[in-house]
Length: 257
Ligand code: PEP
Figure 1: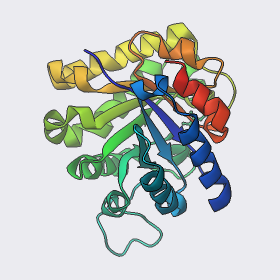
Figure 2 (figure 1 turned 135 degrees about the vertical axis):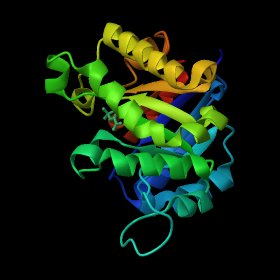
Figure 3 (figure 1 turned 135 degrees about the horizontal axis):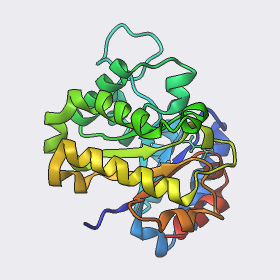
């Protein structure tokens, strides 16, 4: 099956209004015919989403979409500091990240709340980029498959019925925790084997519908290694942190498919 490649820019908690407007403008300017083959997703800090939305409305790039880095596990209500999926949707966010390892580890997000977030995203027709991946000590103990199996089952089980109706709304991001922001990406062999394993689990959950679910890789992707990674079997895109803060590098990544 032909799945459209996704290149997602996770800007995390970086930048200012001025710098991120400049970054987004340069990325949009750098996009060319080659990059039209993929879906490009910009994920600014929540407070700047509205500004980038306005920029996209003005520049109207063909294939650049907006996303949000995190959502609340609850609908609107008394949840100080949180941002609901309906708020993100109102600001034209078409994608959201759920379960990034920084949220799991630094903010202690548990599987129950991640599963709730996933249901809310799919119910609201927002595409969920659900992150899974092992830590360095788990990798060293050869526990990658076990960890990923648990994260997939615990995250998706609650939404199975919904997801069967909307499989294309789910994107799995395989992000080995030890590869994020470290400059050490997983080996080609490990990426291929893990993506193959994820696809096997998805098939056991969704049957042939699983073919519609994209599996992307994240972890120290840059303009030098993107082409190799994007050409690996079963890799349907990349989630990029550090290198997405540099317009030239990010456009090169988008152009490398
Ligand atoms: C990420 O934050 O999802 C990520 C992959 O970061 P980096 O590209 O910096 O490793």
